[in-house]
Length: 414
Image (cartoon, rainbow, N blue to C red; front, side, top):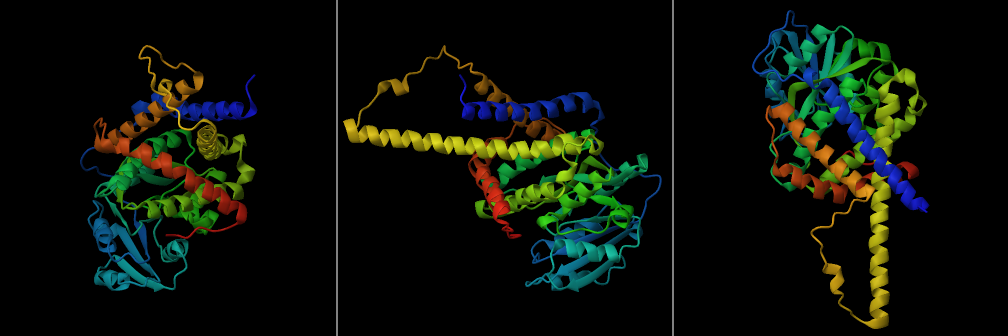
């Protein structure tokens, strides 16, 4: 008879495999719709766009960010750039003031209030029909905006278009692991797009119709994940969100375990608490796959990782405890059977098969995500870095996010 812990284990593993298979089937059904355009494209019309860049202590990257906007393949007279120093304590204000003479750039300084308040200030001064933001540590590809705007041109029902986020200048194992993860993110974002179930409109260069904010209101704090909260709000109101897979925005990523931990703690905490805020949409068909797939998928992922990590810790602890007892009773005893290996035996237990299925589909997602951004199939060392880094560290920020939610402790931004 299967014990309750093992039954829970099998159920969670099965659901995890189901999610990955569902993505894979979605890919097979829509693979011909995934187009990667090379070179420059032209629009029938070039609508005016406002892009706001919130800055807080970004003196090292902000200048490169601004130049990436000025170098966009988009008519500069149709592009309005708003730079907002959100109470920086370094030389960010002096750096952005170098651009004060540009006719299409406006510069503001405000008391620190958080990223969402800076974006809302940009919205107040937005006079165009389209609005977007760009994080001050991210850099837009020259063709990114025009490719994003081509989606609005072909479908008037689209209310927001998100780009593909790619790691910029990875220098160590931690950043290389994130590079593989971001490649997987490109793939998953596109699959969620096909399902009409995108749950985040990322800060780097998502472009909205201004109508979204006129109808639904401005950005909210959203538990320090305002880009997630606005996507939840849009999904609740059946506003269509698209993903432009060949619009590339390059972003700086945390270079240390400590910084990565803080960032992901904030993201997972934001997911948990935004989902709690919008719990009334869960499993309701009128909100589409966002309610019946994306949100449950995220909840299942958190439960699975937390349970499996707890099970591993328990098994290791139990093993060590038994070995200590054994040592106290009979002393050290070398058992050669521990090292027995039968090369003709393959463990065919179902959970082993399921786990390998998960790994295979995750690796496929990373490889195809890379193909969507680089145009070629690449099996790189980044994938090998991903598994040890995220398998070891991710359970800690997941469980800490749950712990913080229970105790209502808000994680720091950085």
